[in-house]
Amino acid sequence: MQTIRTSLFEMTVPDIFENPGVVLESIRATYNKGDEWVTIGVSPIENFSGLYDTELEKQLSYALVEEYWEPYREGIRSLAFASVALETTDPDDYSDRGNTRFGGLPDLPCGITYPVFTTYDNRVMGYQFIAQINCEELASYQNYLPRQGLLYFFITDQEDFNAKVIYAQETDVLISAAELEIEDDFIYDDHGVFAPYRVKVGKYVSVPHFYNDDSLYKGKAASLSALEEEYEQTENLRRQLEEHTLSVKPVHSMNSYVFKQHDSPQIEAANQLRGNANDFTVLLKVSSDRLPGFCFWDAGEIYFVIHKSDLAKADFSNVYCGLESS
Image (cartoon, rainbow, N blue to C red; front, top):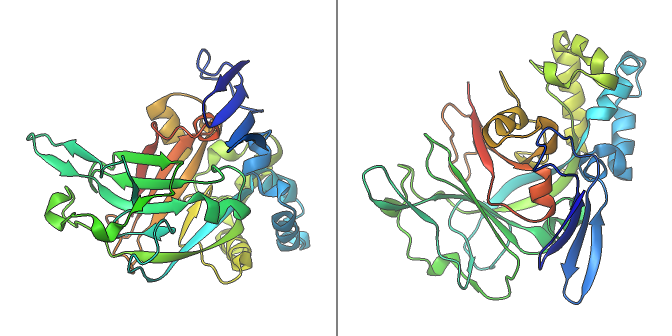
């Protein structure tokens, strides 16, 4: 075990850096909130699983009450995630600074400039802004994000999808997106700047799509492979669980499953960044959305994936981004 302490977190974790094959079973993460240290999580299983949220656990139990689910009930419960639903609503005129937003431009703290990179032909171009997440606004819906601050999500373009995620803890003084002199031709991706939209938030239970999910069918979930042939039943289950978000559709989401034709986002991230797939989580899934103008290839989805130990210590410097499209 080792203890990592920064100005933001104190964390005790297994020696995963010496042995990247270790599966994280326990993390003690303590959050520095002004003049006091507050423990915000003891186990990533508790933080990420839908079973440890009383409200979500009741919703899942109700959805699985029919006799049909009896052979699969324990397996589905073992795989259920406590997810955050994010739905774009109204155009954002930038009148509020630091609100959760998809598209447009970010509200940046003083000292943080809009991120750029050097292209293959030596041009300095801007990343494409996808979203900013106000962690305090989402604090009551989950236990895995920092309790305050802003998360900013960018990609290079819609060919490479190289991710840049920035976390700003101090957000008392923000430069409004309206004040940024960023034009479409400064953004490397051909689409330029997306339309800015406000967001409403909810929480729900996310379960697998049961399509080429062989890597999940182990232990308590071994029997779930039979559900690969039960499309109507599994889609009805997913729909029923998503309807519990109190009218918030999970157009975009955090800590959720992603429909994949091949390897899961966690497996892709583990292959790219090294480690065990079980130790990664989908930090943010962004779907094609007509409101801000997101269209990732053929109406696909992109996903930002992070190692749970990095998330626990608020280190967003090593995030993988991938794409799923038909």
